Amino acid sequence: MRKPTLLTVALLSLTVLRAVPIHAAQNVAVQSEKATVQLSQQQKNELAALYKDLFEKRKQLVSKYVQYGVITEEKGDKILSHMDKRYKRMEQNGFIPHGDKSRNKLER
Image: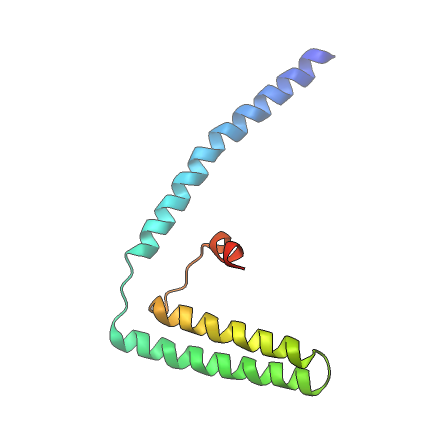
């Protein structure tokens, strides 16, 4: 009875250990692919206009939530401040999103 359990654990461990390098290699490939993208100034301007429109609509939504009492004014101000910081970060990055969510969690 003990041998099948030990064998199962050993096989699962081997499977997991073999999958980790493959997953890591895929992440490196995706990151290096993102790093090579360069947008023209026209593309950046188009994205900037879209992001401005998007953020303005979201700000209107937050204002309505505050007006209707769904969220407090303090919470609304905090959300708007975060949105402004997010827009500035996008602007600094040339409007190329970064998929490194762990970095964003550390900044909070």
